[in-house]
Length: 30
Image 1: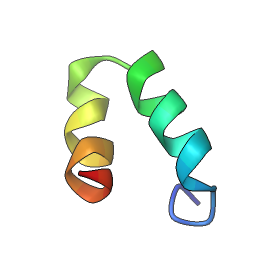
Image 2 (image 1 turned 180 degrees about the horizontal axis):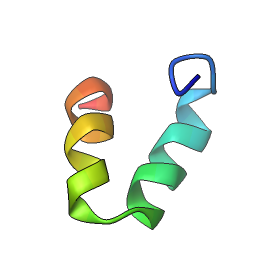
Image 3 (image 1 turned 120 degrees about the vertical axis):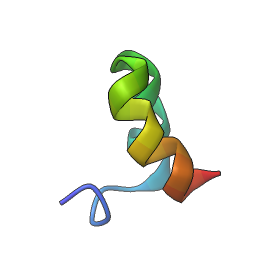
């Protein structure tokens, strides 16, 4: 589902979530 969500939402979501979650989001976004 994260892939379906727009990048803007993903970025905001990863920043809101703890580093553990950011690892996955940041890896895909960055």
